[in-house]
Image (cartoon, rainbow, N blue to C red; front, top):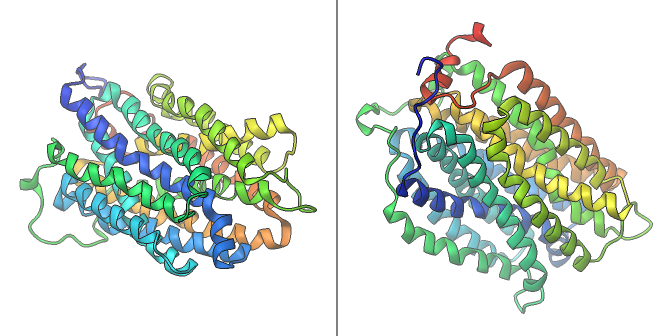
Length: 422
């Protein structure tokens, strides 16, 4: 169409099948994230690790999200389906291996590799969603698929207190989590290659890692990388360390909750946050990506501060809901921008560079810095200050990024070639 929008297109039976498959894949991004945050105090106790040691272990694990770059970029050469298949198999294997770890550092290395495959699986799911669903429904479907990450968080938060009481303790969480993935490995047989990926158009010669830096999209990659990194500084730590803050023994600041009480907060908070996260998809299509970012990033920052500074029961619970919501809700917004602003032959590489390789620097460094700061200042102020991250990211979104809602991928990726239009 003249305005760059796609003609109306109905969702087909295959669209819904693809939606189900990608939703299950994304479910485990939320499951794994909450599993680590729920189990961190138990892991530290089991392996005799300090607060800073726990922070460093999380940082090591998160390096896997950067290394996922090398898998995600292969989607532009090997195809989306092949890479997604590899990531599902790899995550299943190393998640199971994590349950057998004899110490915190072996656990961290196994989880590092598991994260390579998990984040690769999540990233390719977003690329698939952007390329396969109609423009008018693209934000909706990306948001709904990301919403299943929140469902994974709810399920994990609900079962962790129960699984901790089994003979295998925390290890059971990882044993149980691999079963559905084995089923998913068989279900992927009905998955088709993305209709936008053309194997015949792929160069027979290996493309250098720096290929995208010789294109007009290099500046856009750097812009999105900065936005991702600033967002992750808060989104990665606000939920991960909340159990540490909430269960800290007196006289440390905090609400001094028990394991069971924390589980109750997380489960109830995730249940309430889940429909809100599912609503982000319709919101970013209806209100637009940028206006939605104002609401979502603002709520994330405010909630992160509240979750680590208040002991009032009501305010604390509302803040926990907001923090859980924000950690997931920022992702559909940035996933939409990161997939919509690049052409098909560079989409996987651009996502890998902006999110996995550069953007995840904040994801990796923040836990280590916060863990070290917590030994001096306590968990509350150490995490609350990270709220600066999403606020700064919001400013950059408003300054740098164009509105992409409702436009075809050809139109949104073409915008990046004309910097003067921004």
